[in-house]
Image 1 (tube, rainbow, N blue to C red):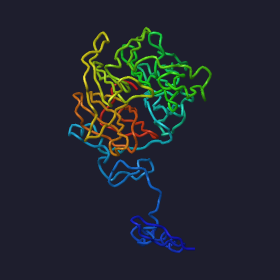
Image 2 (image 1 turned 30 degrees about the vertical axis):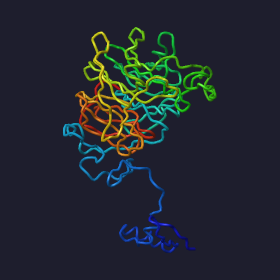
Image 3 (image 1 turned 180 degrees about the horizontal axis):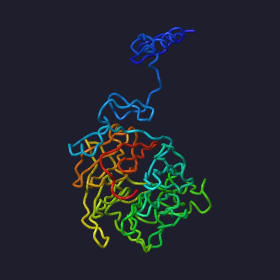
Image 4 (image 1 turned 90 degrees about the vertical axis):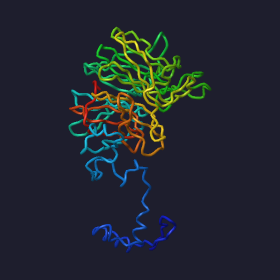
Length: 411
């Protein structure tokens, strides 16, 4: 039986069982031996997602063909200074795919594994360095977002669902580090970093007030003003009874347990990722867009930096970068510094194919490099036994590439 297929450009080609068998046999001798007619017909494969505009197109998965270049074509030097940080013979690899929204990668140096969050699926995942195996690490995770490890090797997690920051102790118990400020519930802690003095610093935007990533407010709250959503559906008893009460701020958890306000919404609206410089004299904070029901000023997708005083007070706030590259807004999220103080930031450029991934900036705010990924990148961290591998949690997948530097600080 003969069937017809439409080839690109409106041309027609006839594909019969005999011609298909012939084409398959010719394929064993090389693609160049395929007849023109059968070649057009076989081209009707399902459309693939947009690439990073790599030429030629590439497959990032472990099964994909290796790059044929000494340098990965998607690790881009913007300024020659970046050449000393890119590892020439290392290629970007997709280690795993299967999340709904990947976030919060953190490296456990002692266990030699990476943990990251799959927020909508309410779970944490773990990638083992020795054999690359991926498994569910925690389920449920209370819709955890950002994760990190402190100087004692204890995991820190920001939970959207319970609106709190927790620490997993070495004996397996869980300590609630913060769930309120001045008697009011937190919004949905997003990212957390440890300081050598034993304190923890975290951001508190409103993104957990979504059905997809947590639980909306009770009726009348900013993310459920009309009261049409039932925040208790699908939740454990006691969940879905909170209402947003605070602006989007950044806080410091003192070793004594006291929670102090360190960055206000007026200074950095909708704060998201944050990290310290290697000497802990600077604090970088990413500002993102408005969250659900957000009536505040809303972020502009940029990065701010503060000086950190010996008294833990912040001063000299200034714009570090507006994150506009070639006229494209590369919205920042997760942040990490390397040992030389360069800032590595995840990039969300939406549908601007070729600008999602990671941007790299000097301490003075100069763009020196980019890493292109085929998905929006939510967060990053340095890991591996030598802490010279950059892990990138990007939408549905986990990516990694070796670099010629080390990450500063644990986690």
